[in-house]
Image (cartoon, rainbow, N blue to C red; front, side, top):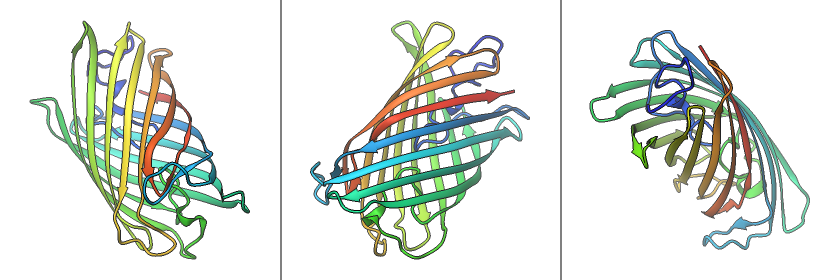
Length: 273
């Protein structure tokens, strides 16, 4: 991509810039036998929710703590392997009622293949994920109840495109991703669209603006229901040396349906060779 920290490969810093909250990759791949790990923690709260018509008047109280480590290793310059464990816990209550708690422990693994870099970078990614019945990485506690079933399985196919350019004389990039998740019952399948834009300020600081959008299918079983969640995040990435970077961001959900109006912050620590 555009610019990198001193002593770093030109692509190394930016190839996982979307690795907070929902988006866990970018179109760029790791170089041969190079690796990168991003460890993130997210704290979110909501005092209202979006009802079945998308109105922001559902009397919901929601608190969530979410951690994830996204690791990548380059088999060669075009093929990158992925491993990402996560843990989250959340509580919610409806109209001041008794809080309901949920815990999710999950793990995701897969690979990303760079199709071409002749007009930007176009990649394909496939992952398999096992998680708890809620998968609190991006969704609310659906209907605030338990299905009584065990872990869910999710197969995701993702198309990624990224390109770099000059903007007001500064190095910049955009990353656009579309994915389809095929999830085991009782959860519905999901479609996601994630957008990221980055702009360098000097050699060591980058500003990011991101949009995460998830729309569920309508085939979920009770207590799951159709939902859509839209979230925006702004953050700063700061190089702390040749191998370390730190990212701090804030996010909010401006729209949705059968989802929560969550807002909060995310902190990520990056390490690479």
